Image (cartoon, rainbow, N blue to C red):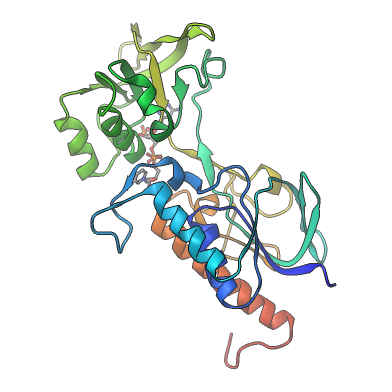
Length: 317
Ligand code: NDP
């Protein structure tokens, strides 16, 4: 049993790093696999204004950098390896990566979510050639150009506002006639002279080819069915996220949307397997709620390991 870890954490976003901080401080010697999305969704965001403790705001990547530093300080072992499969059918729990296989008594799934795609013609072909889902990464490529953002939530509002730093004009294409975004973010959009909302419209095609890049979008007005073209060279998707749970299908219970099902203590249906952050939360999806559930999962895992060792806390239920 020497090579069986007490705990393995999958994912390096707010939830994963928080779980690592707590389990490292509990002397559980956690091993954390970062996967490909180091820093999670927060690493793709710009200014974070609502994480408590940062009254002036903080850049997303800087915040996750601080989480990582704190987790490493208490001895978290970090491996930059993509997990390709898991086997939770027996004991110990098994984690398979491209480089090898690892065993653990408990696992916390914090693999987060990835930006949802539209699934329209031209989207995949022009990905990285004008079509993207990351304003922070790609915004600067579109200086003085006309671009479009699709979506009506906080992400769309935030990205559209951020992109006005570079673009000469930002069209905000939304399938309804009002934004879902919070009032403060929606007001910023409506007050920004560089943003032009395109209401009641959906994108039906991304135009262009890989050589010349994106040249425009084909739109359809959902009210009257009219088609039109928007001549833009950049297109940013901000239509929500899908959970990164493909490798857990058949291993833990997932809901209809593919999110990991957890109880109020972050437990999945497999004893010793917990989940935290966006991978199990399709409602709040906030940095602070991800960190909160990461903490809860870590404490629940700690309790599970104590019970496994026959040393449950006195009075624990
Ligand atoms: P949301 O799910 O909130 O919004 C997705 C938007 O995309 C909706 O307006 C939706 O339209 C639209 N949409 C979904 N699918 C399609 C489609 N196929 N075609 C066209 N439009 C589509 O996702 P977000 O990423 O914006 O936000 C996720 C969570 O993260 C939220 O809780 C949000 O508050 C939070 N967040 C907070 C931020 C902050 O506070 N700084 C920043 C960014 C996100 P419809 O409205 O019609 O459903």
